[in-house]
Length: 447
Image (cartoon, rainbow, N blue to C red; front, side, top):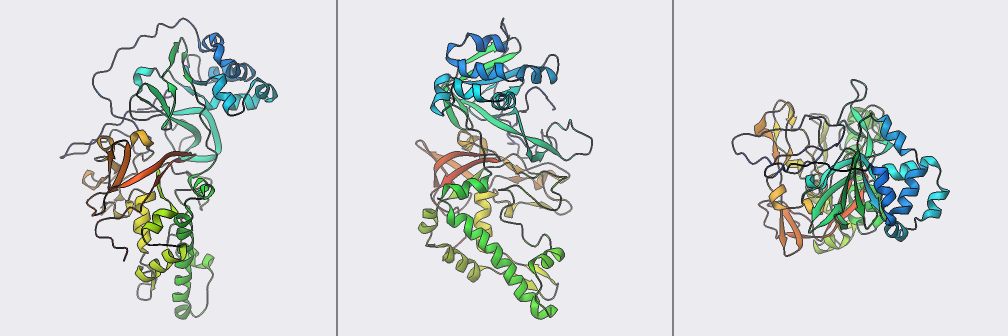
C-alpha cells in the first residue's frame, strides 16, 4: 500500500451490495480512481535523463534556467540513489503569460529557484498510460510546514499523527488534454526519461496560497454563506450564556463556557481554515475536501435577501438551548443541516456505529472532471476503521449532467438538480465549486 515513488493509490468503487471492501488503510484518505481493464504493459525505452530532456526543449529555456540554478538534482539524489522524478514543465510562453522570464529566474536565490522547481516536480515515474478521466493525486516535492495533514506514508517518527503538507497536483486526461486540478494545461505531451519523465504544459499551474475560508472571503460572491455561519456561531453562544445566567447566578464569559463545554459547537472555520485548536502542535491542522459554495444570489433565490434574514430564519426555526435538566447545550439551527451538504457532504446525517460512531472519512477532494455520477453516486463518504461495515456512509448527493452542465442535488429530495456554475477554484485544502441554488434535503422547507 505504501509507495514512496508515487503518492497515489487506486481506489476501487464500492458497488457490492452485500459487503464493503476497504482497500485503503485507516489513515489513507487520498482519492484513487478506478482501475479499468487489464494493465497495459509499459516499457521505458528512454535514453536521456530528465535534465537532458529539458536541455533539448527550446521552448523550455526559462524552466531549464531555474532547474540549473536550483539544487534540485541534489534534492532528488537525497531521496535515494535510484529515485525517479516526474516534471510538469510549463513552456516559456506559459510562464511569460504570468510574468516569469529569464530575468525573473536570474533574480531568484538558489532556494527560491528550488521552491519553484519542486512545485512542478514529484518523485516517481508516472507515465501517461497511468492517467485516465478521473484525477490521480501526486504530491509535489514542495512542502509547507505551516500545514499538517493526516499521515499518508507514515515514514516519520513513530507515533506522529500527521504529515507535513505537500502541494498536490490532481492529474487526468480529457479529450487529449492534460488536466491539472481540473483545468486543461494543453495537449497531453509526455516524454519518458531514464530517471523519470517530463510532461510539457501550455499553461502554468497556479500555486494555491489561500485556505478555503480565505478564498471564499476574498472572492466576494459568498458573503451570505460565510457571514451567516460566523454570526450564527455568535448567536449560539449568546443564547447559551443568556440561558445559563439565571441558573448559575452570574454572566460567564464565552471562554469559561468553552472550558466546560469545549465541543458545544464546532467552529465555523473548522474544515475550511487552519485549525488552531488545543492539539495544534500534535495533530493535523488542515482538512482536505471540496466545497460547494452557494453565491449570494443563490440565497436570494431561496428568499433570503440579507444575512439578517438568514439569522432570523435560524432564530425562528432553530431549537438551540441550554438544557436545565441535563445541564448541557442542546439543539441546532436549520442552516446547520443545509450547510452540511454544501461543505461537509451531509455528514450531519451520517450513519453511526453504536459502539464506535461514524466511520473514517474517505477522500472528498474532487475536481470538476471527478463530479461524475458513475464515480460518485455510489461512493462511500465514510468507510472503514473500527466500526462495522454496515455503518459505512454512502454519498448523499446525486450528480448528473445536462449537456455539458454539471448538476447536483441531495438524493431523494424534491428539489430539481441545481447547477455548478463555476468549478475548480483551487485552495491549499481543495477545490471550491460554485452553485446557483441552495441544496435542500428531502422534506426541508424554507417557509
